[in-house]
Structures are given as structure tokens and as C-alpha cells.
Amino acid sequence: MAGITFREAARKRILWTALIAGAGFLMVFGVGLHLQIADFRASTPAFVRYQILSGMLMVGLYTVDLLAVVMTILTCVDTLAGEISSGTIQAIAMKPMGRWQILIGKWLGFAGMLAVYVTMMFGGTIAVVQSVAGMTPQHPLRGALLVFLECLIALSVCFMFGTWFSTLTNGVIVLGLHGLAFMGGWLEQMSGFTEGERLSLAGTVVSLLMPTEAVWRRAAFEMESPLAGSLPQFAIFSDVSLPSPAMIGYAVFYLVIVLSVAIYHFQQRDL
Amino acid sequence: MSTPAVQTTSLRKKFGDKVAVRNLSLEVPRGSIFGFLGPNGAGKSTSIKMLLGLVKPTSGEAMVLGAPAGNVEARRKIGFLPEDFRFYSWLTATELLSVHGRLSGVSVKALRDRVPALIELVGLTPHREKRLGSFSKGMLQRIGLAQALIHEPELVFLDEPTSGLDPMGRRLVRDIIRTQRERGATVFLNSHLLSEIEVTCDEVAFIREGEVIATRHLRGNRGGETQVLVRGRHLTLPMLADLPGCTAPPILDSDQATLTISSHDLLPEILRRLVSSGAEISEFTPQRMSLEELFINLMGEDRGL
Image (cartoon, rainbow over all chains, first blue to last red):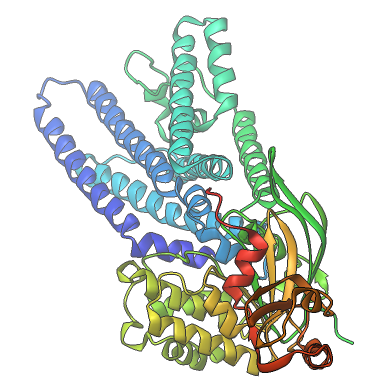
């Protein structure tokens, strides 16, 4: 099943289209970075230059992160929901294998495709910044793995709701949840500036419901230079409210639980 | 003695408040072609899905090839053509069969011969490298039938296999079904086309409101319900009413009578009694009831959906 799913992504040109769009993004990003450097005056302090370029690097990586999550949702939202409603799944589900194998096979196929996408986009962004500005993020591998984890969470949530709802409803729910996580992440971030406990709690509760954005903020912390991250007035991804390693542990646990619920419900339901 | 290919006892399925299958009890002998007939909404497709493990019964028992319905090992020996077969439109016909073959546990080596042979069998050789997205409904049915047979199953469920097919396609399906019987497979055929069932099946079950209301043997057994046309002089209603095995009141119109009797085996006895009662018989013609007549008799006239 994993092989078929991966082949589907390639054959339906999903992966290629996404990578071509990604190449467009890298080009625009590279040109923007180049123009920014050209606009520096001789009098611009090195410290400010560093902050600006660090900020641009993080904006580039954040865009990659958003693209990866949106691409995850758009590509997998139909895979179970659509096949159940169209009846396509019947010819597969009666084959001599457990339903969990079908679901895990599809999940692995998508995970493989997302791994390729995240690697290419992350690698491309870092290569552009390195060649144009001579900068590299602090821990690119850790950052890429966390973004990949974020995609896997979105993928699993898509699979879980796909065993219950139609394609459209599934898409609305998962995009809505990611939007909620996005808002929760920013609430937490803002609470860091004012040290507001209630705002922080609200952000944390939302992150527990959908931890994708919290994972990104940890990824940003891992990749951003310590100097840039410690100066909130200069950096939008500053570590004023940082998700702890325990939150990442929770995100992994969340992924396992969501995937288990998806498997359980897929096994129980009528097709 | 081998177990039946399919055996169900009081199988029932409810979707919310709606009863889709009320009380399905049937037995399908191995090696037979079994027709499953009923009006729209009678619960035929749900019944097949329960036998395949796609739908969980609310109550009752179903055994398929000697194992509980849905058993993974039993499914290895089962082929299935769903109603309105569709699959990933980006696959070619050859790839589709390879995928289904692999998922059914057929080795790559065996598929090398089997895939082109099956594509040839269903008449799609010129289209073998075309994507399913460009296939017509009839072509999809043909390739769907091929995928159901790719692992040479012992039991094949065909849900409306001739749907969307032209007359040549329907004939092809009939021939393929017969080929399955020749190799010893059991075919469970759900079809609306009574003529298809009549010429193809050995036995048929009539289902109404999720319940088997009658079964009939259609091959090699002349014991089924029969109508007889009798012409002659001195025929009387009391004489006809006294005949054994009548399942409906005899109809007498002057010198011509129509009898409905329960079994072909009673024909010699009926003729003997008529003659001994004083009738002068000039014609005595058994007229086997067509499946369509039987279907209408059993189901009643269309009362709308």
C-alpha cells in the first residue's frame, strides 16, 4: 500500500507540482534576500545586518513549514474519506490483509512523500541563504525533523477524521484545527512579551488540542541563532515563550494516539 | 464432505433504525453458480458486503469457505467485483491487475503470465497500457472482473457484473462465469438481469426486504414449479381441482386448461389421472415458468420505491 500511495503522489504529479511551486518560492526568496543585502548601506551596523538576515532566514523556513503542512492536508485529505465514499476502498479492503495494514501502508506512503518534500524545500532554503548571505541555521537537521513531525501530525489527524467524515468536511476540520493551533501558538508567543499567565494558558490548551504550531516554534528555536532568538524586539520567532521538550514528547504521543484512533475506527466501521 | 461455499444463519444488519437485511439464511454449494435476486433495496449488496467482511452484521452467523465471514485467510481465496467498479484513475489496466494480484498474494512471476492472459480474456488487450481514467463504464467493468479473478479464487462474488456492458460484453461475462464453474470455482452472482441469471445460474435465491423468500434450482433438476397447458374434451373444474400437486387454482377455458404444479415429477401421474377421469387429451405441454414470471409472482407487482 505504501508503494502504491507513493506512486500515486508521483503519478498524479502532486509531488512534482509542489516541488515546482517550491522552486518558485526559493527563487523569489533568493532574489528578495539578494535585494535586501544590496540595500544595506555602508553605515548599517553589522549587528543589524545580522538580525535582518537571521529574520529573513527564519521567515523563509517558516514559509517552508506552512507550505509543508498545507501540502500535507491538501494531498491526504481525500485518501481515506474519498475512497470510502466512492467505494474504491471495497476492492482493497476485501484483500487478504488487515485494515490496519491498509491504513499504515497509506500513511507510510504519504510520510515518504512528505520526507522528500521537506528535505528538498528545507535543503533548498538553506542552500539559498548560504549562497546569498553566507548564513546557516543553528541546527537544521533538528529543525527539519521537527517540521517533518508537524507534517506527520497533520497527516494523522487527516487520516483520523477521514475515517469518519467526507473529504470536504475532513479538510475543513483539519485546516480549522491547524488555524486554531496557529492562533494558539501566537497567543503563547505574545504572552511571553507581557508574561500574561492567562494568555499563556489559553495558548497551551490550544496547543494541546493541536500541537502543530508548538512543534514549529520549537523548530524555530532550534534553528535560530541564540543571539537573534534572545532579542524579542528584533526577532518574530524569538524564544520568549518556548515549547519545552516535554511538549515535543506530547506531540509524538498525540501523533501515536491519533493514528491509533484512526486505525481503530477504520477497523470498526462499515465500508 | 466439504462445507458449503457460503452458509448464513439469521444474518441481520441494521443501519440506525433502518433494517437493511432482516433474516438472511442461505446455503451456497461449492462449485455452483448461485444467483441472488431481489428488487432494489432488498439488501443484496449489504448481504454480499457482510459475507466479505466489509460490513459487520448486527446479529446472526455467516461462514464463507468454512471460516467466519471476513476471515483474512478465507479472503485469500475470494474474488470480488463491486457494483460500479472503480479504482485509481492514474493506473493503467496492466498496473491495476498487478496491484490487485500483489495485494492478493500472487507472486510477481505468476503475474507476468496471468496479467496479459486476463486482459486478453476480458477483451482489453489494445487498452492494456491506457489509464483507467480514459476507460468507459463497460471497460471498467471488464477490468474489474479481471481483477476479481487475478488470484484464481475459489469463490467469486460478482455484484451486477453486466452493469454498463453491451450485449457482447454480457455474453463475455457469461462465458467467463461458465469458465469459473469448469475450473471448480463457486460464483455468487448478484444481478438485476433475470435473463442473465436464468441462462447462467444453477440455483437462485430470491430476497425481499432482507430475507430469502424462495430458492429454485435452474439446472439439471426438472423438479421446479411448472405450468402445464392441457387441451382436450370433457375437462371439468372438479376434475382439475382434484389433481395432485397444484400450487394455484386451475384455469379452465372451454377445451383448454392451465395447471400450475409444484414439480415436473408429477406430470405422468397427472396425465394418467386426467385420462382415467374420462378426459380426452389432445395436447399436454409442460411450460416451465420463466424466471421473470416467478420473480413477479414472488415479489408482487411494482408498488413503487
